[in-house]
Image (cartoon, rainbow, N blue to C red; front, side, top):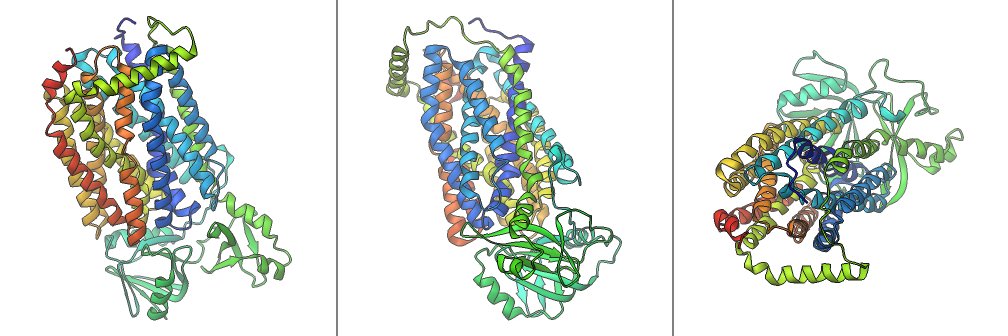
Length: 600
């Protein structure tokens, strides 16, 4: 095929990044991962461990599939067909993620794995077009165009999710959502006799969060909230009632607080994530006339919240009363109150997550619409002599893979680069897979907070990809990658060590955004510069293979460490080690030698 450098072709190719980025942004990194760990699963620690297993299975599957299918695409000219096929696998898997409800853990994980494999494999065949559509002196710049368009797509999709599914009282697609604003979560550091110390967030942030949640804006900083406040430790923990709650500096004082009972209940809880939920009476005019509200014999209305699962079995339905109190509705209670139908209430509770689950449908629709340009305007190589039979195609493809494995040592610089990338790319995959889970588990972010956090990160990432894409062409791919690795190491150290103030987590997030895009786009462009001509699909299949061959290590280690120590922060520390190893190995790569070796 003649080299097509037209602007239309480059723009159409770049639009694929715009099309698929909402999948990884909303499903893998920020929203669905957090939703799975905190709602579908029993608790965030168990959820994070199970999520790590799903990412591990994805990585192993892509590592196996990518070189084989890359070789078949090279020999048979099926690059466009495979790109379309895997794109629609991702789209169908994203749609299916709407259906798993709280407790359906393995159903959710199955569709996460299927959709994520489709996403990753689609990227293999899209990346393989880069050496053909880009002039060799502008590969870094054009790779940066695609990545920055991708972050723009992620940014817009985050905003759409925020305003059409989370903040609005009437989500898109006519789905249901919970409306109660007066229940908030914060992290505590220390239990004392009459209250809790909350040192992991700014005082002003705590007060603002509580005032907004309880509709008490304008109150003084020494906030006194009377009547029926509740303190709850996680979904599987205990509920304690206080007649009043006051906050001064970072100390939460609760009247009638039994610290010994609280500590004992906390120790017995399986979800020791230091999260507390502060709950107050409903805001004025909050109650609406819909079926989610039920009246019990005590004269109070209760809002049906969410199902409670233990060991994947439904044990009851959480409901929240006008006075701020929680109750758990189970089958025996429904026998006592004849007007309560346990099956109907259970359906309402499961439906309460519709607005978050419907974000997956939005991602699928987005992917369908914006991937059309690459299907229409990016051509395939029609000069390839296709094998006469399917049997010959398989033989030729596996012969090509064997030949590549045998001769890969001739491309010593390329091998060094791919080995280095094994580590720093593994670290990036781990960050993307657990960013939202860590934000919620360590800092108590709500879905609203996580979406805003994601918007900020995508702005930083888009700007970083665009401007450092030019830097790639000026100083080279290696230096750009190493600069980004240093920035990512610093960001991760900040996120893991400075947990006393959420400001530092925001700072770490911005740094990750700025440097993650250039890290990926410079890696892609450097690979394109090293690839021998005529082997684009196969070598980009290897690029995906080496990116996934050990990509299960970071997520798996993070899940195991977090589960063993019941601490997500220690799990995230694994990422720092991987970045450091990748940085040291990348120092051994001679970019100029690798580029000249391509033409030997």
